[in-house]
Image: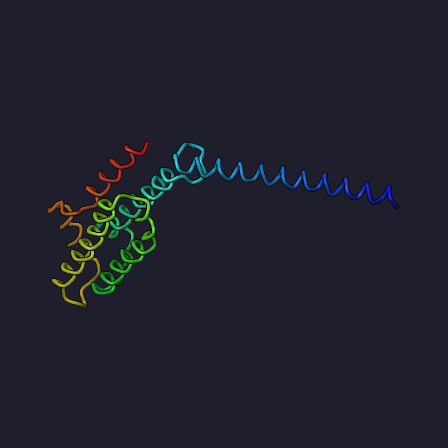
Amino acid sequence: MLLFEVGFVELQGIATVIIFGLLFYLLTELRSIQASLKTGQPGAPAGNGQLALQAYERLSLLTDRVSLKHLVTRMHTPGLTVRELQAGMVETIRAEFEHNITQQMYIKAEVWKAITNMKDQNMFIINQLAAGLPPEADGLDLSKKILSYSDNNNAELGQMVLDAIRYEVKKLI
């Protein structure tokens, strides 16, 4: 029985050494990951620079999707009235913006403000142009007015927002 007790004590000692060794290894790995996140080194799991790049990618897509010209080409459906098309466009802009709202945490505040201004401006333009048409008019009339307005006034903020995004991305790369 004494031999069994000595063997059991030895196994406990070996198990304790293994557990402490594993714990030491895990703590070392955790510190390494935390250090690489702070420095933003390439290869670091989801570092701040990588998150910012992904956010700028998503926001450049948002900018493209809510541009007036792209909204007209994507949303125009024969048979819609002016009010139906107007409501659909405004809701699309709002939904796209809300879908990407969390990206503001990873980008510069000035760029986020530009994106917010673009959203507000595009919704204002759509609403103003729709207000100038009779409610029962065909949605095609609103589409033509929006395209004409975009071409003649060069009023969309989309290109300026894309330029700001490109500038910030170049600084990150």
